[in-house]
Length: 262
Ligand code: DGL
Image (tube, rainbow, N blue to C red; front, side):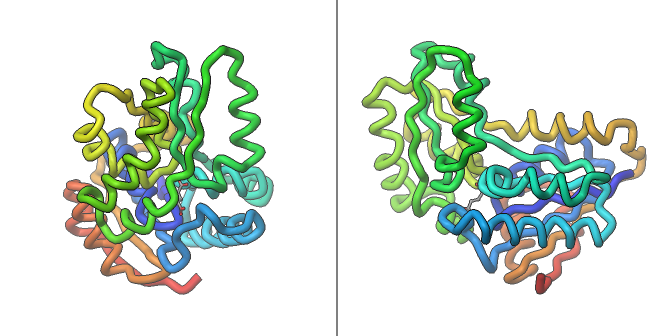
């Protein structure tokens, strides 16, 4: 059994934890939400980098054998430095799935919904440049979505109005595929499907990220059942309530929740 740390600015990384529990439940998972400081999407690069290093270091001190940076924003700003600082620990990042999106899109027009920091980052620009095909990417920052999701609001008029504001212009420009480039957004998949039906194919990379995690720590799953502990820089109890609502996994019922000051 491995001890696996997963962190995000808030509850977004629970979409990655969900997939990890589906693929390989026999581990001890530590989920850390920096809810006191969410959202990260418009904070400075230096701030996100320093904070991500601190959170990662905290998880490693708790005994984590591997850490998932379950946040596109933190990955783009900080993953290189995190890997440099902790060379002995497998560090897995997330990035918008533009390659699978380009392969999926019939019209070769893809919308990318992500935070402003992710879209502005050199890492994302390099990713786009590395894709050697004729796919067009319409980039849109999802301003205002993360704070609503952090409050457990996953549908309703406010969310739908923001989605119309961000996604309708993509459809008007011919997009048939949408990349969810922020780990919070998979929690909006139901409402996006409700509003747009099959007009947009949704690309979320959670499964691929988790497959990569288990490639790196392969062979370490025990036959015993695993467990989950959740930690928040704001309120562990509220985090656990939201996690139980979002992830219907039995481990969440017995999860330990703690508020931590990092
Ligand atoms: N969940 C994050 C991401 O994947 C961060 C969102 C935010 O804090 O703005 O980018």
